[in-house]
Amino acid sequence: MNVSDDISRAKRKAVFPPWLDITVKVGGVLAGLGALYVVFLLYYGISPQAMDIGYQPEQPVPYSHALHAGELGLDCRYCHNTVERSAFASIPPTQTCMNCHTAIWPESEKLLPVRESYSTGMPVEWVRVHDLPDFVYFNHSAHVTRGIGCVTCHGRVDQMETVYQNAPLSMAWCLDCHRAPEKNLRPVSEVTNMTWVAPKDPKAYGAELAAAFDINPPQDCSTCHR
Image 1 (cartoon, rainbow, N blue to C red):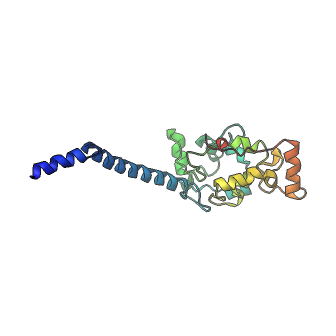
Image 2: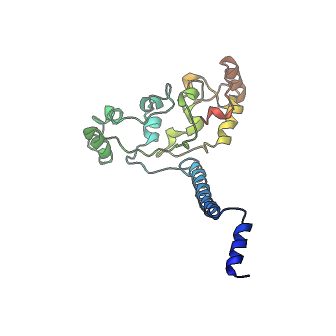
């Protein structure tokens, strides 16, 4: 028996063709890359921009909510004017800022990016603070038109010099409210009132509102994952 006979016998005993070995190796590499991609998506979903309480990015203009919404008493809807009819609470266009600042502090160095935006037509590059993952659907109008106040999710922005993320915005946090919305309900007319206080026990008062307006938030997966 020689070497060629051994090779021939090995080939006859082989169960799988040689090309399958390469296929398995390539498949293993692709599976590994796929796993890394999934890990990346999961990490992005729980990144500071999406989950961390206290996330407070630096903005291109030092806009003070404490001054505008607090001291001056501007209603949230003056700037975020789509919040009652759209899924998104729009970032105000530069024209909204210039409605006041053509006359108020028109030469302020801090407002230079706003004036440049107004003259060029290019938007101010605001940094989103409350940024949910792409696989989550959230509708602002569905909440504020049913009595969920801005303060419930965003905190006391009227006291924030620079806005930061006040709540975790996690699935568990959202489901907690959907399962028991009573503690967060208020009259629709008071949704932007940061200092509103329930006339009696908040949970009992919220239960009355839930019953009166048939507030029963869905809890199925397709509500937020579409």
